[in-house]
Image (tube, rainbow, N blue to C red; front, side):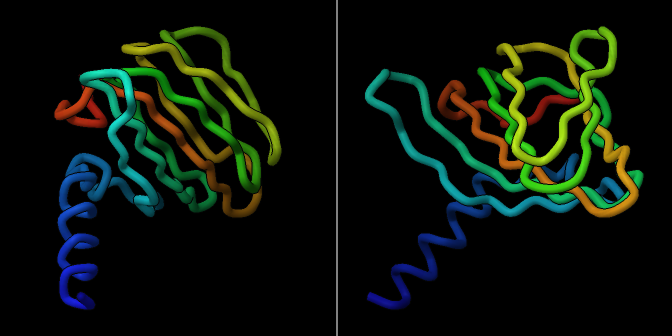
Length: 129
């Protein structure tokens, strides 16, 4: 039973791993949840993203909606080339499906967000242009 839990965890992490993000300096991801929804072809994915001071997640898209909740620090988001949206810990942002967006830690210390995605099953979570 213990080995089954370890294997299940490794499979989940492998499914959620996004090589494009693994190479970005100052960013780290902790995959928390991946679960099929009652809506056919949709799943929810939850990830904690940590940003070192000044770290930047360049423009990307998701195959569904994202709700970003800032856990700590100050993050600046840009959606579809629009004006910056600056959020502090405790604030949220809805990012529509397919919206091209970026995020940057604009505070003096570390920052992190809890990203919750409702996405199409089986598609890559992060797509960079």
